[in-house]
Image (tube, rainbow, N blue to C red; front, side, top):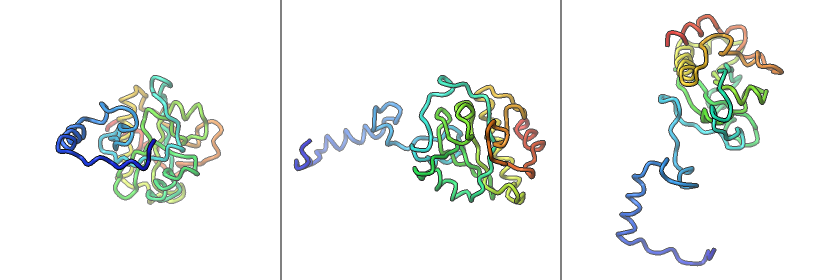
Length: 201
């Protein structure tokens, strides 16, 4: 590669060609050009806030692995700090989604086809979607109506998309993952309310 070569002056034809190429959907583009495009979230109302590629594994689920579970987490951090942690390549952690306490706003950080590093158990990571909820396990005021309602809609959509039963055997707490040393979502998470909301979403 000759780095000293002067870049060509764009002609009108090149400018028009570039404009036409910009109108092509990113899925039709190949290689790095497609990867550079901002990808839409899997869940339509989610905001795409990508985790560092160092914090999850690329995959092609549900082809590569079946999706059997939704794992419910509580962040033990603020919403903004959680997104920052997922963007930090040194942290080696991520989840597919983060739900904000104040208004139920949903961010997607990892594509559903990829494997987020959230459960602390590789087998469960490969077969689940992880949803983080802003808050602390001992501060129930973070579990707002908006958080429950928007999270339940998200979980219902995931369950419908992958044929996951909308019950407590398949929508599980982080602390229920085998080998987990976590306690989230904790004693103040209202499972009865949550599963009811999922089933009526």
